[in-house]
View 1 (spheres, helix red, strand yellow):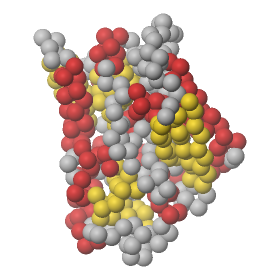
View 2: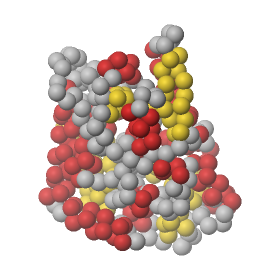
View 3: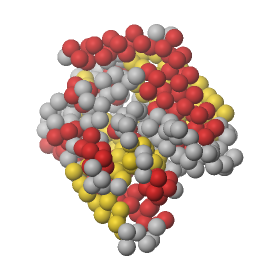
View 4: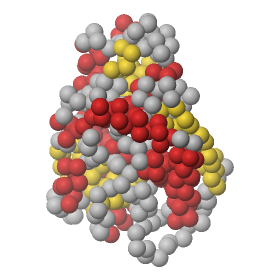
Length: 344
């Protein structure tokens, strides 16, 4: 029986996410065996520094890609939002799984259960490791203070509950859901309060770009709607040249053959911001196999089973929206944010 080796980070959430992908693959391929190879990444080891300060694009992926390159694993499961929009040569995202809730959630300290961010006392400290969340929420809730909090989900929840430092913390709703901790969610943040990160809530399966076998194997997991939304989001971020060190956020929706993309950029304190929405017509129905192309990848993703035309339309939407914001002066906001972040 063939054994497929699956690479993952060691955290409980990463293992749960990997198990869910393996369960889907087992349902498609009952004759295959899957074996987990767990490892720690740079982002798991450096816990005393804000993510945006470490200055490394592939914080949570590098070690896993190294194992993939050395043929120690056949595929790797990631949170799509951890995967940079430009992957190192030789790698590709062979599957984008159906997205779970992409929104951010607020978890309150036990003494503030029943509150919302709006009703927290003046100068309450809210923990988040994300510049994107802090910038948007500072603008919306000026009476609160935002402070970096690092560690995996278990660690962050423990810091919230045991230290008297934080009144609340902001986490991705999808992660809390996957961990079975929905009961801790005190508030879900909707786009008008806080737009989400590119790819948030979706899982990506990374493989060697030359491994046609593995691409065919994991390709069955592509969810067409999630894939197209995430291509648009990743193209938007790539064209803006955004990453961990600048506040960039998105919101996407598919409705009646239209893909809607809202994207925004913020200064670090949220005082300066710019956002716009665009839409594009996407046809997913015409299922035709394209001939072999030189580079089938778009923003790091390979999806041969989804019409190329639809993927290109999604990518163009992301690029067009980024161009619109750049033409209106977004580059200035991002440059200042980057410089300030580097200086701190």
